Image (cartoon, rainbow, N blue to C red):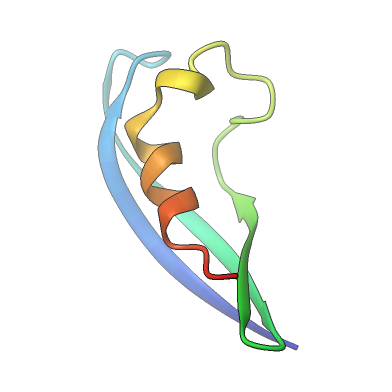
Length: 62
């Protein structure tokens, strides 16, 4: 298993300002899965409309 980091910048509605978020992906059997974001996206009320989260999920490969 391998891990990879990506840094994604965008506007955070919760913080009402620009943010750069570190995203960590787990790579195993040619699958790249988002395993960690250094923001509270699990509890965030704006996750559904979050451009940063959308970009992070778009980098996954299955």
